[in-house]
Image (cartoon, rainbow, N blue to C red):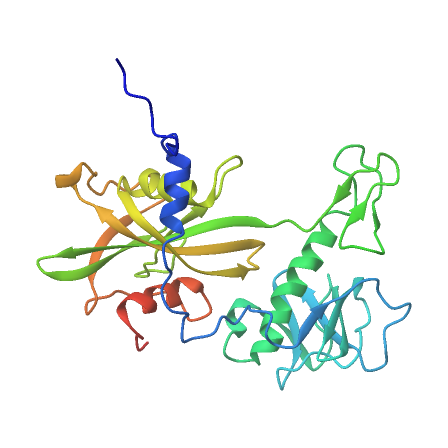
Length: 311
């Protein structure tokens, strides 16, 4: 006779539930270095837009990913002649913030500077606001017409969207979630981290492995899949670290740490994915290569494990 199951028995967890439970383990202490993209710099998105810009409005003017600044690295005091695509962003410390784009040369006394290269040279609030403004301006520029019937779209007054008056389709600013994993292990009694080189990186630079989340999968599944696809390595103990908007052009990066599953436990050996990873290597904490700059969450993720690093 088969013994009855206990009344409180539950079915075994699915693979997806197990992966998600791994990510809910206690996370590391909050990073000591603040996120320059956090919304802690006095900016509040706002709609609907005022009927007319205020005389004291703050103007962010872009040429693709470059921001217009004067010789003192300040935004223009007024909207330059030839600017187009004017769009309201919200309020920066109570001051109206507007953005626009230009297809012509910078006006006299000003020049366009790439936003990424301005980190550390302009105030954090301006850099963070510039990242938001760039994403909104580019979204607005690339959605002037409906992708279904090619009719001109119109901005929605109540939310950040452009709508097609002909078929009713709505177009919202694009956001691409991506996952980053810093893999750790102990080798010869000393801790190591796995860093990878993308073909797009500057010479000599390595970073934590990262990739985009695919439709239909959780962030945790994406972390396991990306690591396996790009390095052939298996991971466990996935722990959430932090997130960062990354407007180059429109990503949201979710960063994790994880532990390596070695070959002796059934895991794989390093095999870089052709075309995606030039090299993947283990590094001791005191022998690190060139790392991404401090504007990126990857630098904070690495420093959370190995400690602050001098450039």
